Structure formats: structure tokens, C-alpha cells
Amino acid sequence: MVRHPDTPMTGGPAVFRSRLRSVRLTALLGIALGVTFGICFLTGLVSHLVQHPPGWFRWPSRPVGLYRFTQGLHVVTGLATVPLLGAKLWSVYPRLFTWPPIRSIAHAAERVSVAVLVAAALFQVVGGVLNIARWYAPMPFFFTAGHYWVAWLAAGALLVHIGVQLPVVRAALAGPAPEPEPDAMSRRRLLGGVAAAAGLITLTTAGQTVRPLSGLAVLAPRRPDIGPQGVPVNKTADHAGVRTLALSPSYRLVVTGPTGRTTLDLAALQNLAQYTAELPIACVEGWSATGRWSGVRLRDLVALVGGDPERASVEVESLEPAGRYRASAVAPPHVRDPLTLVALRLNGEPLHLDHGYPARLIAPNRPGVLQTKWLTRIAVGEPG
Ligand SMILES: Nc1nc2c(c(=O)[nH]1)N[C@H]1C(S)=C(S)[C@@H](COP(=O)(O)O)O[C@H]1N2
Ligand SMILES: [Mo]
Figure 1: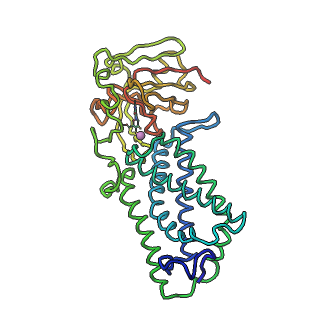
Figure 2 (figure 1 turned 90 degrees about the vertical axis):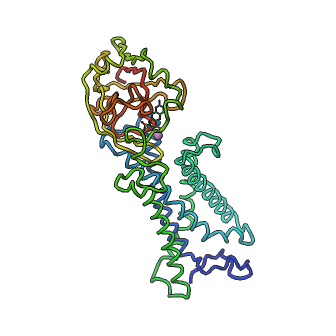
Figure 3 (figure 1 turned 45 degrees about the horizontal axis):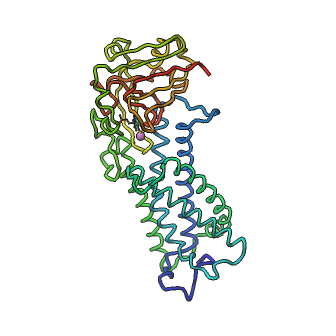
């Protein structure tokens, strides 16, 4: 049996002598974690770029459900990481107590990189779970920014770790399967248990975005079918402080552009050509739900104030007086897409107040945070 050189074979506390631990077990868990972490990192990076696009970044408006898929995958792989990371830490924690604690500069550097990796991985997984549970109290910082920067820290530490451990993993997995040993069965059972736990978590949470699994989504923070008009609500009108303004007869949507400005009340919006699009709300938290939205094409409003519907970019603004998601930018691919609507109706009814009444943005392949509700201003920019 291969044991890691650091694992105390004798003299250590009896609790460390579980014969379930082996380098092979740790290596297999490490490979599984590398896969879930890698997918989670890349899909997270996509989500960050879509929300904070640098100049070189172009995000298309099709396929309609691409972001729904990448962000669903981000949350699913992040959740599957929980049991894998737990088992992996259990399989190696005796090494924390190796003696002497530092053997060489290289050994010290490796231990520091592992410490960074463990801390960063726990921060990501715990923070991510708290975020989808919408429990922000334990996180006295802006979650999204912390989650993004620590992801890079974790990815860097992981690369170092893989570089250092690759030969060990190769040796542990090379050649024929290890000799059957007295406890081989129970070790296989342990791996099976970890895989089953990861599978169960996936199965009971993926329903928040994979509609056919919604009946099984008992562990998901959201169900895609519970909420007014059959769609979940992220922030309510009362929470956003917009109830009075949104219900007021003096509500207006102001559209400004190269040739001037137009002020539209709800009746005027309803008198423009109406279109219907079936589009998902795909929240960064990993839940998503499809709705049938009707309203005015954004490109038609752009044309109304002299903008070029093919090339313009747009800034939309909410009645919400403050808050991170009160405004958003719409880039040309989404402005020109005929499916991008200023929606007035959802699933055959006037928009529910909590879904953005009187008017909200809904665009294909766009994160939920950018589907601005309670619109009051649309500013059409010159083509850049
Ligand atoms: N003005 C405003 N619009 C907003 C938000 C907000 O907080 N304020 N939240 C966004 C988020 S995070 C999501 S996921 C969607 C959810 O839309 P829904 O509540 O209609 O499902 O609205 C988006 N639009
Ligand atoms: Mo969201």
C-alpha cells in the first residue's frame, strides 16, 4: 500500500491511523475536485466578464439560455465540491501534524501554498453556499468582489499544488490496481459514499434551474415555479422602496437619444407595437425560470429617439432610488436583438409589481442581475 511519506505510520495519535486513508484515495478525490473546481472557476469567470465586461469582451445575445446553462453549472459544480472537499481534507489532515513542521525552504513553500489553497477553497465554498441561501450576515464584505478575487487566489494555489503533487498522483495511480487489502472494500465504500453525496446534492439542487428536476429540488434555495405569476422574485417592490412610484399615475418612462427625448406613460407604451418572447430569468444564484414576456422592443424605443438600433448601446435605469442593481448597460448585441423587450406583461397578465411593474427589461442570454425592474429611464448612447 502506498502511504504518503508525511503520514505518521507509528507513534502518532491512534485517531490518525485510519487505514481508509491512502495516497490513492487522496489522489482520486483530488482529481474529482480539480474537475469540479475547474468548471466552477471557468463558469464563474464567464459570469464575472458578462457583468463587468472589459473593452475586449463580447457576449452574444444567443443562444438565449447560454448564461442560464453556464451559471447553473457554476452553482451545481460548486455545491458538488462540498462533500469532495470535506473528504479530501479528512484524508490529508494528519499531515498538518508532521514533525518537524518544516524540513526545507521548498517544504515550507509547499506548506504555505497548501494553507492558502485550503483557506481559499473553504472561503469560496462556504461563501457561495451562504450567498445562494441569501444569508449575508456572516459576510461583512461585498460577496461578489470577494468571491471573484479569492477565486484567482485559489486557482493560483491549485496550480502550484498540482505541480507539486502530480508525480505523487501519477505514482499512486500508475500500474495495476493495488493489492486487495483487508480494508480495500471499505475504502471503496468511502469513495462511493462521497460520490453518492455529491450526486445527491446535485440531484436535489439542480432542479432550481433544470426544470424536469424541480420536483426533487428539496435542498435548492429556490424553486423555479414558486412566486407571483409562476416566477420567483429576487427583490420585492417594497424591499426596493418603489411601491408608491411604480403605482403612481404620474409614472413615466423617459427615453433619451441623439435626436431628443420622449416621455411615455403606461398607456403610450401599450400603444406601441407589442411583441412576445419566451425568455428565462437566470439569476447568478443559480436558479432560473422561463416566462412568456410581452412588451415593446428595445430597438424600437432606440429608433424612436433617433438611435441606430443596429449599433447603439443603452443604459437603463430603475425607479429604485439606490442599490447595486438599479441600473444596467445593454450592449449592441442585446439592443439589436428583437427578443430584447421592455416588458409590460408576464405569462398573459400585466407584470406583477414585484416582477417590475409597470415596465422591466428582459433580454436573451443575460444574467438576472442585469434584467432591470421598474424602468423609468432609457438613455441611448451614440454608437461607439
Ligand atoms: N431595479 C432592480 N432590478 C432588478 C433587481 C434589483 O435588485 N433591482 N434584481 C435583479 C436580479 S438579481 C434578478 S435575479 C432579477 C429577478 O427578477 P424577478 O424578481 O422578476 O424574478 O431581477 C433583477 N432586476
Ligand atoms: Mo439575481
